[in-house]
Length: 218
Image: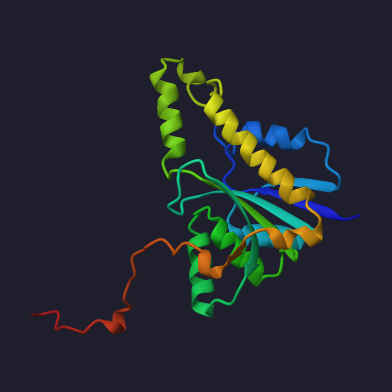
């Protein structure tokens, strides 16, 4: 039987109202899909996800990956694209693997590393939602400011109408990507390696033999 993956990258189950949180997961789980759909939280490092797929022999006919991004578009913008990949220098792939093991959750790294190890099916649709980097922190602070008891201050506030509208938009975009005929997927805008965000800046260390040696007595 054919299987389709819905992967939520950056899922937070304990913050209600977060666009990739429990409301979205509940809507996805309560839907009647036309195909056999597996919903997975892809919050682990890409290397660990690759190892899980390989160990469990997971293969899919289509993958719909939902992820928060920051690409300079208006906040709350939801955009679906078809991943077409492309060639990257070996060192850039290696650098993305290095960044991945630091714990950074990134749809870009997941796409590249998944491609490198061959876990993705031919048809991969990425549903991106433009969110600020401090979105989670701001939501938690807003809950505290409401004066709720500490045990209720995180993730217990009711979802706002604006948040609910964004969750619905993400959900409907995922439904379209999942139910589209294979012949219609070419109608989605393409996303290639040229569209990826650059790697985060990290410090670099010089090896000892790269540093001019000095007389320790001087």
